Length: 364
Image 1: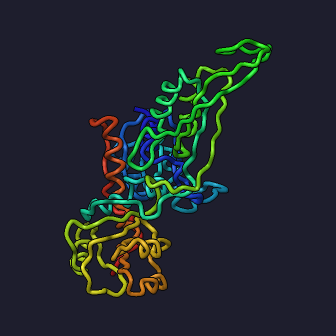
Image 2: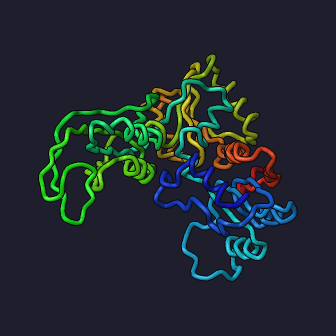
């Protein structure tokens, strides 16, 4: 198996187009055509992680956090990032990083938190905006079903939990074929009128090329009339955070105890307890302070995340309990997502979880 095959599976699950603008999701280092001897899964890239990969004959590392964020003017080993790059290159190790693409997909990082807590009826807390598009194409009536089905198969026409959604209206198209054409119907130099159906389908932006290719490969016309529109609609299948309901109500201290046990948290920071039963919980893996008000508006009684700052706790205002379980702790199970994806490709492949705790924050 080659590096690019692992990448293809990871990016089918979490398209890199979902990453935040500041991020560096994707192959940070390596050759996509390298044959893989083994894969090591981790949350962060450190020198110890590189050493662990070498010791276990793993020439690919899949990490949640990117190794390379900012610009590199030189690579001389002056810090851990540069030393990791040098060591990885010397040992022909490829490094792929998921980060905010996996934060934003509906079965990603926040989903894992909800899964560990046994939450149900899950929804994206802050659905992604400006990611949906619409394609409008005129198709000869006799060919409309073939073209439409090809676009459905490529991923167009999904709205929420409904698939194969389209809007169709009949009309008449006209064209005059030029001298250097090979028209499917009609004659060169004469205006032709053809019964057509205009079909409109919604799709997520990362599938645009695939859908256009599916449409063009099945459409009979030499020149196809189609339009692409960007939509302001939110896409409920992607976005940051997640909200879910408990199977049975939790007491506040009971929830804190469960979080300590399931996420191996030494100490938990939280806002004022409200002495209420909990049946609706919002979460966001990593740094989620920006979604506190969104969590309050969602009706959740609790918001669980990491990297909550001092002044952020004042936003609770007795409307919600804010709980900080730590950045690393909230994202630690991302390795399980990577593992499940790779195992679906080849269940017998050599994939191992890193045994190194890369959390840089220690508690006394």
